[in-house]
Length: 392
Image (cartoon, rainbow, N blue to C red; front, side, top):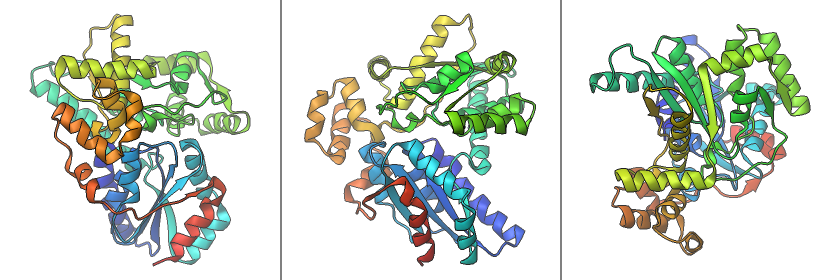
């Protein structure tokens, strides 16, 4: 997934910072994942000196392959735990631990300081800015655009991290026209960018693009901080209103500033499947459901906006992580038959149907050993953290 690059860099940045600052405490990384961050973080921090990493994921909110990648993770400093509920439950549980002064004091007493591998950590976002610049340079060197010509980026997002990195690339001077925010049926970001109202009091959907099944987008407050002229008091007020009432509304003037940067729409489940099928049948290129969301929304933008600027679609994950949905979309098997296959068997079936090479790390899952199992409630997360901190 796209997070692999940033999460190979972050552990090294963290280790260098520890050494440079002279801090004696070790770092315990807490991460909530909707699927992709977890494996990327585990692999990046695996056996990195002076660190431990705990990953919490929603028990029913990731694909079978995503779960297997995490629960079979090797390394002496890693721990993975399923949490009952959805990603927002796991993420809010992690945030609560970060602000628990008593628990943090107990961790400090035994030599541990908390940090995060989620995009709430600026060190996660920083490397992601780079590939927007790299993509632009590729277009120039390939003769697709002239230097300085604008491009649009269409980004599938739930937590607003990947597209926020694009916002920062734009602010740093990259010639970006419009940033297109692509959502699935959990279209809270679409509604916010269109109407200026962020309202979590809505139905939650488990979709075939599970990494975007999010209703509380952590990085949105960073965008607000930016467009509000770095008015931290105003941002705190909105976040307080969100915590207390589940919703907030921004002024028309602020919404106008956001709409100068962003355009938003969402893709239904059927539209997402159709995008996978069309890209495969027309181009012989296999995409995952999250990328398909962006393909669909990019098409909607082109159809509705009077804009001839090239659109760059940000592909976010390998289709082999979502074999069931991809096979269903391209007609490789009838949907109901998926119950007769394990996740590993679906990998082989997708390869048989498409001939697309299986990525090495996913192929290795066939011989993997499950190390972590069981589920806990959100309220049990602090105790789980302390237990892990006391080990090793």
